[in-house]
Length: 579
Image 1 (spheres, rainbow, N blue to C red):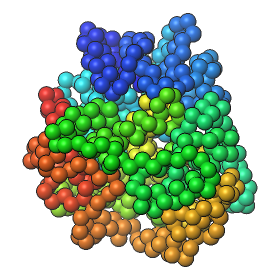
Image 2: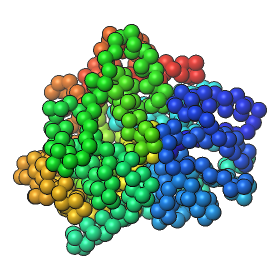
Image 3: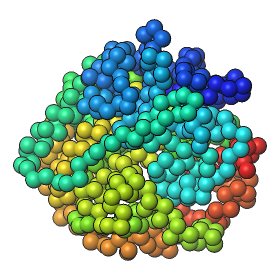
Image 4: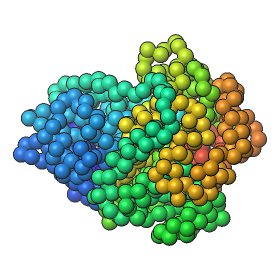
């Protein structure tokens, strides 16, 4: 939880610190605590919705965290005190440290920075390692000049957020998962291996289920003990949120349960049925009906959303009526813990690929080629775009696989290392700075266990359903949006639906999005007020910045259009610095 900012302590540090504090205030943070050492100065900000302590000092030694962590199954000050006492650089004891976070440690006169296991919580830095910030906007405003980077722009537009260490700006990168830093006149980077299983194992299903359930229970326990019933948990008609709810119930917690969407939607109807059957408090939150705003109100709402979401929001929460912001804040107000089922698909065949070796290029082409040539300018180079993604995929799993076909379990690593880090990492970094945020299925030990599953147990959610039945058979017995309850076998229709995707070869999957676009416009559930009457109040609808990358009038995918508009709004905000 919370946030941090560090700048090299030179003659411009004061000016940049003032600008950064002003930006953090616009994010919602209040009082800041000075931190620094080894030639750097900066500050830490506590989460503005409260939660466990995220700063601890012992004499001159200091530990500050942005994000949510547990250490030796403890939270807050007990966890930070023990971690500070035990800390050695480089840090390698990941059996004791869990969560998604950025960690600053000053110990014995030396200062260090490191990320969680997957670098999910985002730390932005410049090329010379003179500045570090959990705020993208504060980082951008610490530089005199910035410029858009085509690969990052296209990845954000097509796939929601850039992968690897990229951002949409050439001058800003994100600290990677294997890199730990010692601050000083010259910042020293140490590469730390963070291995994951590269082979599936054969063992009885029930043994796997019991071991994974034990690991998840241990992970949940300190949060259940600290927060009690002050926990918010989503529920839908799917599997991941129901599994998260089962873990909380199993720990003796009665969380506040909610669902997003209109009352007629299948997710909402199924969640309501479960809530009525189990007799727990339940909230239906329809974001689109949160508030009615006029075009005259829109500019103020968008500006507020822009700063609250640090410019690069992954959902519809920039050009909306404020419903997304209200939903985020409601989950953590008064020090509540927000729980997410995100990354639950690590237990399933997320990429829907056949059980065989493939090249990294096959995988990124099948999953990340969400573009059509009609939407982009003529000099967009699809081979270069996919080649850059291929290189990132190989860096994520290991350069030793370059030029070779990846073993199928190694392909599965790309889900947590590449997809979850970029997609859920942005969500974690935004929601996790407000207060406590727990995404249990993105824990490195849970991910490691899931990567040993044979693909046959991942297909149609066979293992995850068995895990839910083991932990909470009553919850498993309710219907789902898949057309069956999770304590019964998947229907023939569901199995055939998955199979129909798996049997399509990667070269065909690479063209799926473009073929879908030929069938007509694409709409997503995020919506947004994207008509000219609204968007024209906050943007030049000629898109002077993004028209360098996109043929905007051709875009008939409202998710893509919304993200391109997000980038245009960012460009307007940074116009004085754009090179």
